[in-house]
Figure 1 (tube, rainbow, N blue to C red):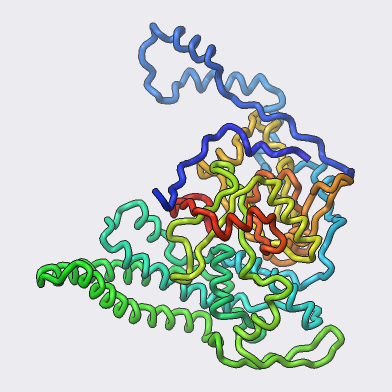
Figure 2: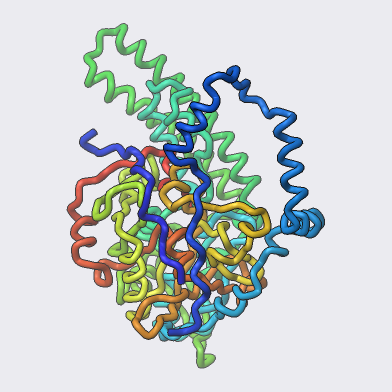
Length: 518
């Protein structure tokens, strides 16, 4: 498979510190960059010294020239004939992709979980990836054929916590201009459906988990847009009200001569009291749309059949269910994110400003490392029978129906007579790529030297896509579009664990692509 081009030219983007042999597909041709040399630039400048200043507009003679050039090229003429009446991605799919990207793997987990899940019309992929990882352990312990944890239970408490998180940010940033970049960014999507691994840990550690039968899907958990729109509207209204109250109370307290520290404490108490009323309304919206979930420490009863057809029962709280069945052999709270961000220094700890769900809980943390270290962590985890949560840019160079993620899957360059030359770092810098989706790696195919060739991916888009819901990801696609893998400390390199536990945090701004919610 082709090697990564992600370690080359792009200069690192600024980051704030807290202190301030199996069959192999043909190797892709080297990327050709349409970029003039220094001599060419100098020649162009000298040639144009006596010409009038260009206007910057598209010139009609240029359009005529471009048309004449394309009409002389038979390959482009054929492309135009074909692609003017067909879908480019369907037409330009390389037949070899189906051959080289076979759904065959020689290193797999020792247990197959099911069924394939579907997040339907919601952005809950990270919840499905998390619960799909957790259910492997639960199903093995309970000897189950099919099982799902309740994603809706997870969804309810995440929305509740995100609403509180947003309002706390509104209180802390009440003195910031409403049109500042940070406040504007936070107001764009106060409680969208996405999330990160550390946010998942915050929810399951605080609220536990329950079987799907105990708190099933509702319309609004599977089709979240209408509920999200209503909740977003109300949260923005609450945030604006908190800002106004903060300004008014601050003026009153200052006029009364209250000392600064006492004024700050009194102001915070007043705003928290107001916020509590708003949170009650948030709870009402969520409970009407999603139903009322079990409380974290209330007992529930779950009747089920094991694989042998024996009737069984569990009685306990969501937190007890989680603690008894989901934390061995690897406790989810010990797992952490290893990321590949070629814009920034490796072997360093990163976090994202203002990203989270449970206020005051575990922050989103990443240990940045070379891409090969992410791959090694995946292989080590699969060999230890531990599925791997990972974050990627799923829409790039992938075919949903076939379930193939392969950098060479489409022949755009030949059809359009272009080159696509951005590196991974450049794509991140330009907004061309970011983490958009979370899934689970359940197997890997290794060549005779032990290097990965392709990976088996458990998606959450139902069983009508891919290979009955599973996708195949090539090693070169991993290089370019995988940004994050999550592994327990026991399966990670010791130096990366040390960085996670003791490293000095570098802070991405809130709008950085590494803050994109999967």
